Image (cartoon, rainbow, N blue to C red; front, top):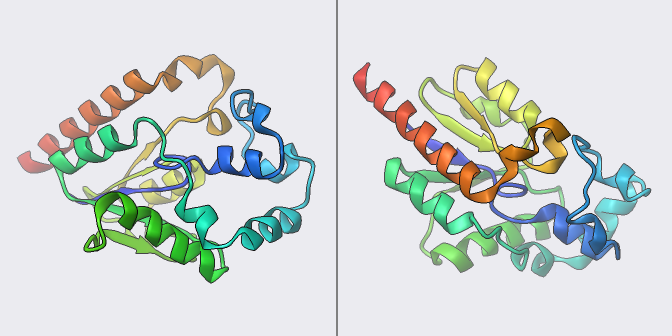
Length: 190
């Protein structure tokens, strides 16, 4: 069993960084429910979004805040099975370099447990028993369709208001680790 862990939206706060970059930090705690289109929410074009992000360079990506649960999630998963970061940088090489620096600054420069590819189809790596933890419903659906086991990491942008209770950090973390532990046991029994 392999565990693949998305970065933006699961480990690091991309949405918060974008909201601060565009001078709208109030959106961080008031992000609209079930709304994936951050450019639309900020009332800008996709081009404006990615141009401003690209202009910030590698440091913007490398210095992105880790979520408070990051270490507990990573260590808990790594106790179950080796974790590989699986992330899609933008086409700007500074995004790739920054994401690598983000990983290395937390796990050391010898860390090689990552796959960084601009190709958005993560499901190409899916195999039976392999788990992807991601905040993108599309990535999870594609992973499941390819035979893997997808775990949607709940965030405001991928959750309906009625499911707000699923966003409690401690409960979300505990439930995820418990469920993935059960999946591992089931895989080992086969």
